[in-house]
Amino acid sequence: MHFNVYFDDETGHRLNAMAQMAGESRNSLIRRAVRELLDGQTRSKWPESVLRHQGFEDFPDLKSLRSELIPPTDDPLA
Image 1 (tube, rainbow, N blue to C red):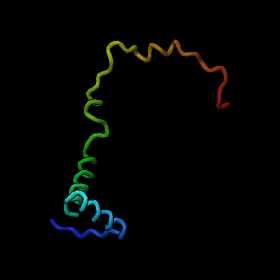
Image 2: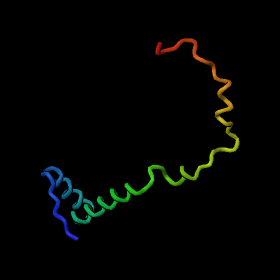
Image 3: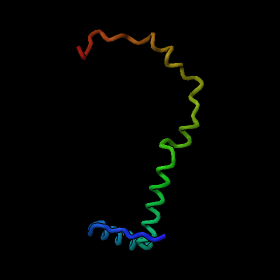
């Protein structure tokens, strides 16, 4: 599939320089950038390790700690 993409001069110069430094073609860099953008849209925002996390066994339930909180003496919004 073919597309025409137009860049401003600064972006075009930066793309040319990056392609030369990477030893790749501009088209290759653009394909990779678009692929990474599209892949990022379909992936979860959280890493899989975070999504799998089940908590810590020895960590107390936060609801049980509420009774230990000291209520504020002054209402800062009053």
